[in-house]
Image 1: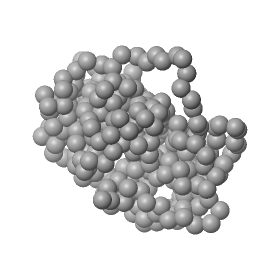
Image 2: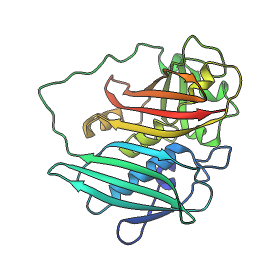
Image 3: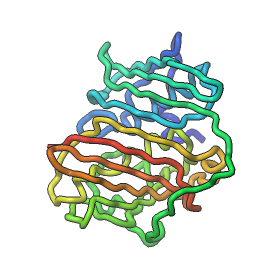
Image 4: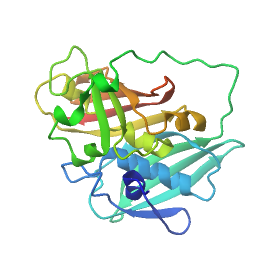
Length: 265
């Protein structure tokens, strides 16, 4: 079976660390521009496919300089530096000869240690007791339908006490989670502006950083089941807002975190 996410992030290899892909119609926002999670995912995919890549993806810092529109996207991958277990990469995305995004990505082979600490997983309602997202936001972009989301805390387009929200999420077609899909899933949360006002305030992500802590065994255990996505925000003012996300496996393992800044009108 070919999962939708794999089909829509399938890159075509060119020469010298270069790849191309046709911008996805599936992962597209109502503005006509590509979903930022899809952009982050194809940048990560390009590093994974590079013949010199020796370890799993562990982090990405990506700039959204302009939107990725319909048409061909070119990706250029450069290995900046390599150590015994860690590699540092730069991926540049462009359309029609102009750069749209730049991503700094780290791959590294990490080993288990005798220290095993993580913060506690938030306590909240189960997926079965949570609210299916389409029932509360029918005007969402079409790509949202490819994720099964259940709202456990925080209602969009309402004045909540804080911008915090908790959502259970998984791929709607049963695709198991992996490192590339985490980069996409961590950009699925709605802007924090949606949780402090009843008005629709359009905006866009400017910069996003994602850090993966999960081992391959952790990801295999998470599989295709629901994961808990908790998102908080420290500020929504001066036309800017942040977003800080944690994603947990259902069994309580912190898989990854992310932070981003976005501008809104």
